[in-house]
Every structure is written in C-alpha cells, then in structure tokens.
Image (cartoon, rainbow, N blue to C red; front, side, top):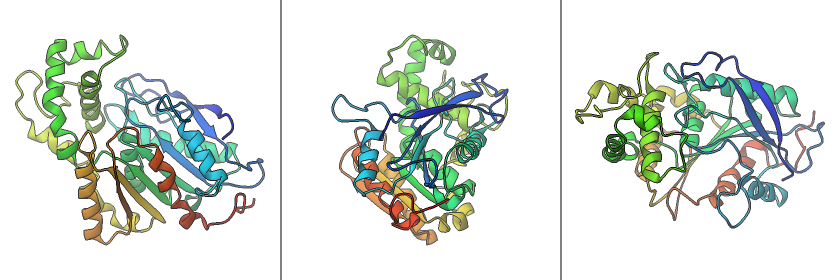
Length: 334
C-alpha cells in the first residue's frame, strides 16, 4: 500500500473524559490499490490491541513488512477485496479502552462511531453498514466483537485472538499481576512507572489487568484499586466486581444480541491453539456459544500463540469477498 494519510479528529464523545485523556486523536488511513477519490470503496476499521500503537504502518517484527504492506499485497493480488484500512486511536492513560463506553475511562464506542462518520465524509467510501467491516487482534478483536453486537455500523466482524472467556484469559493472570503490583508498592506506584519504560512483560500484564478493571467499571470515579476483581493488598476476591467484568464477556453477551449477530454478513473468529494468555479456550467457548444459538460464523484455529500471527489476517479478510460481492476494485461506483 502507499504511505498512509492522516487526519485529526476532535471527538465530542471523548471531550471531558474521566481520565483526562486527549479528545483530539489522529486517525490513520491506508488507501487501497485503485483508489482515485471518485469510485467508492468499502472500509475495514482495524482496532489495535492493548498497549499497541494505533497504526498498521509499523513492522511487527524485524523481518518482513508491516501489516498494512501485507494486506496491501493481498488486495493487489486479489486475495482480499480492495478497501480502505482505517485505524482509530482508542488508547487511554492505562493503555487501552476495549473500544467500549466506560463510566471510568470514557466513551470509546462513541468515538468509533464518530470516526466512521468522519471517514465517510472525507473519503470515497460505501457509506453504509454493508460497506463496513470492523476487525482487530486481542483487545482489538474484543472491540470488534462488541461493536458487532451492540451497533448497527458494520456488516462484518473479524476477531483475531480476542479477549473472551474471562475465566480463561484474565483470571489466570491476576496472581502474577498482584505480585507485580505488590513489588511496585501498590497500584498507584505501578501507574507512576508508566512513563519510565521500557517495560517488561510482567509490567504490561499487570497494567492490562488494571486497565480491564477500569474499562469494565460502571461508576465514575472508580479507582484502579477498586476496579480490580480482588483486593490488591489481601487478595480477597470481590464477587460483585468480577460479576461486573463478566457482563462484558463476549462469551456471555451473545444471547442478548443473537439477532444482530445472525444478521452479519461475516463473523470470523481466529485464534492460535497455544495462545499465551489462554485466549484459545475463551474463543473455543465463544465458538460453542454461537453454535448453540445457531449463529453462522467462520472459526479457525491456527498453529502458534498470541504473538507473531500477522500472517493470518489476510486469510480472515479474504472472507470479505462473500460480503462485498467478489467484484473488482471500484465496482461500488459513486
């Protein structure tokens, strides 16, 4: 793909957010082969994972190209339908927003909806749900699933190694996160180290658990300590807090959103069979839940873990041919 273009979005949804995070965010846009500003193209909204830069232009590894390069080649050779790739910025002071509206973090689902409207205004897009997909990995995959269940903006959802089955992907991380919090001297002391990187894996895991608590909190003014599923000093479990987390679990959400899920043109789930954070068991549970509800979806387990799986993205996005008609680039004429 050619070099990305950027625009700054002044988000009404994020103005005055509880964490004081910027409401003006940069949006990265990758234009597809053949884009001329006249013919209309569909759009893939890509949601980065927790702690990741809001970009597809950087190399994930020392070898090979960026994700944008990979997907651009897949569009050029016809494996993936040509589409704009749009990367919104949903980062927070704690590392990530889960792309949901949170009383403690801010309205990031609202921000995503604003970005969709602004992209349609600025670019030659197919300005309707039938021309939009939402995709992402890890927390981005979680955000894609929730957007597909709770909004009518998208006709396709692609979730790669998404946070799901919270007993599998979050609970096993809590003891080590508490150890890291304790070694730091407490939650506030851990947070004070955010800008003193580089940070190791234990720090990032602890920050992710703190961030999840804040995302899933339901009251303004909730402190990071109070948002954790157990007391960080004693380890005593807080059942009422954990139940609040579980209300946001994609494995538990589908029964209330089955009609919307069934109306999607594509629901694609993908996960590594040895995911480092247990996502494979959560996604397996989600797969089983969707089967029980009769919701059609594509399910793929691949070799590997949570990281270094960029090669599976094009395979998943290839399914968009079924949604967007299999026509050549630019067939969606203005």
